[in-house]
Image 1: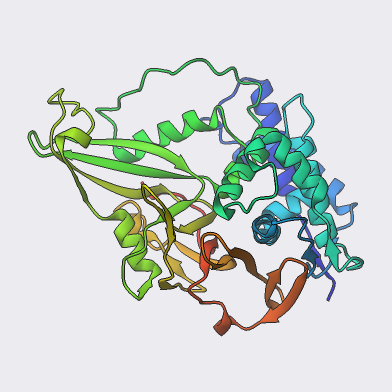
Image 2 (image 1 turned 180 degrees about the horizontal axis):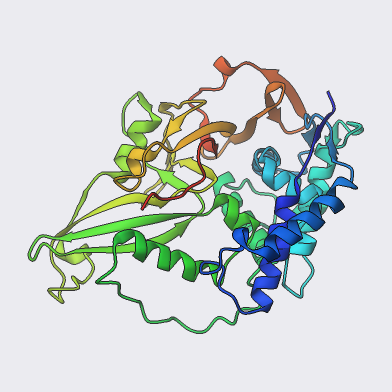
Length: 401
């Protein structure tokens, strides 16, 4: 059934405020725009303007994608991204045209938005959308995907998000120099050090893609000789989780394996900042900043010297209230996510096929290239689940300091 989705004025106001703040040389971390007279005035003007516009009208979204030659990996990922509501609305409203600062045309974003326009046509006119133009532009940007051989869906997702980010980066004009010296924060709390690194990241990379998908990982090292602790922080757009070697496991067990303490010998350990030499140490990963959308990759494919094998272990996962708080900072509290899309891989390494399951206002649907069928929740969990898409459902506060 056709539905309607309204996009409020706050997003438009935020984009305009970003521009004004940038032009006036203000730091958005030090200037509380939301409390300023400027923000209040702009909100009033934009509310009037947006009230004069029609709300974004969309169809059911239950439309398939044509397979144009081993492109099931593309179709499955695009369907999952199509059901990422904030990204969908951002694309359908062409908000990136006002958001971007890059002088070059956003060709890939334009083509991606055209595909989404077909999938969410209010009239549900076409039962199948052809992604040929979008894929052609993508292959020009990423020649690795040229040809008609089967590709990995998670790898495609990473490249796609990276290229979309590049085209709509709000900091595209920031000049990038060579490798900068690493900063040290010996007197800072962990949260302050993480916030400083995140701020530095946003000074160069700030887009709708970052708003939605980017989080921050903390890697903590503990030297066994001098007991010194050191931390590094890295940005991530997905979590690639190992799967325990059993017939059936839970997503929580995969997360625990990902974050468990790892012992590093001298040959594989980094330099200890205090000892100033390589020592035996332990390493632990945790999530320092949680994204709005967390993409969880179940690492089913293992590469050895001679071959690639696939794990068919059944991984059970919650559909609602996935709590990742225990994998974050000590005092962050519950961090809840709800599942809204699954990318599946059926078959073997050499003879595989990708499909997607996505939720909308009317329930779940199974997307198999051009075919779209309704499915029940008890049909979602299989040993084919490969990439899980979760939306943050509680407070958007990233870290409790």
